Length: 82
Image 1 (cartoon, rainbow, N blue to C red):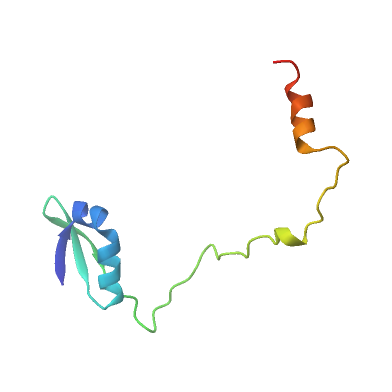
Image 2 (cartoon, rainbow, N blue to C red):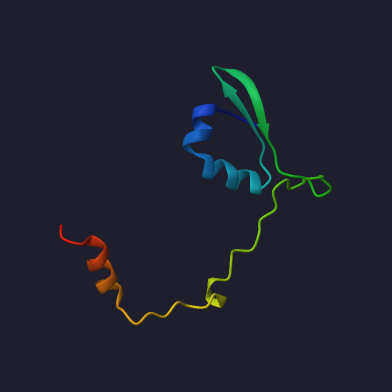
């Protein structure tokens, strides 16, 4: 198990995560005192998702608003005499 400081984890988190994906484990220290372990998730691990991802809204299905006036004309009207 590799020992890294909290600062190393913060600065090189992508490198550390890729190493964990390859099966490596890390002990994270703060001022030389171990505070955490980062280990790969085992096959049988019970990892629950508290906030599951949702599908993004399908904006293509929303009916478009059609106006007789251009957006430039609307903006000029909103801005008034500046």
